[in-house]
Amino acid sequence: METILVVEDEISVRSGLIDLLSNSGYSVLSASNGNQAIDILKTKTPDLIISDIMMPEVDGYQLMEKISQNDSGYIPFIYLTAKADYNDIRIGMNKGADDYIIKPFRAKDLLSAVKIRLEKSKKRNAKIDEIASNISFYIPHELRTPLVSIIGFTQMLLTEFDSFKQNEVIEMLKLVEESGLRLYNRIEKFIIFSEITVKTEKDNILQDKAYPVSEIFNNVFGKFDSANINTLQIDETYLKINKEYFKFCISELIENALKFSEFGEKINIEAAIADGFYNLTVTNKSKIDFPVKNGNDIVPFVQHGREKIQQQGNGLGLAIVKKIMSLCHGIIKIECSIERNVIIVLSFPIIS
Picture: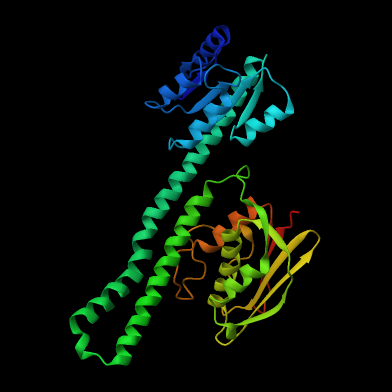
């Protein structure tokens, strides 16, 4: 049985809500103000909160803020109020409310809103459980591989250092560094993936201040061998999408193109402004039929083409890029020709 916390200072309204929800099969907790609600939340975690806005001591807005500050997980929140002003609705939604019911209301409208929010919450929780299961399954193998190299080479150096020549020591240290960077990269992807997957379009991934894209490109290009990259055009503009997310998208497309390219083949990079979007295009000649034909083929923890190409990684990169593009209302396009030419275009909206 799902539990709903009702926070309402008017006794008649609170009693009516308790009766309505109880008779509809829900378990109901109740509080007459925000402070009482906070006390209840210290020991109980409801599946949904219905709260009035104008209340003594702690109002609905303050209650929402306190809940969001505590590590109590995601709880759907419906504001119940007599205030129908658009500005009040905007404030409530910006603070994280999922819905807004205006008093007086019809019982069927309230029950419908409750049902919708609980169903969405179930889907969200199921998605989080799926992610946790996938991460717990993949992390041991994906982290173990580089760790074996790091531990193995360091043990050899500690126990047999005098038996190695200087150039052999340097080579082993390079391999340790390479494995360490690979491990760092994989952990970063797991962190970003777990962080971004639970975000919705309500979550703002824009920065207050725009930044020049050139500084991001310069940073990313420094991590790759320039001999493998042909930069056709990089238009300068200013973007507000989270810097780290933008950097990740560029890096992932380059990394992906290099991984699938024929040996000695350069990849082409172009970034141009068109129709209100900043279009990042990465083109390469693939050594196999590129397994990802469109955005629907991009699935977390699936390494496409692994049966044909030995790959390092965890199958998260393009899945993260896809989610970032969705959150910033961007567009991802993938084109593959029979000649194995692969073109991936990310279109980021330019927000003034």
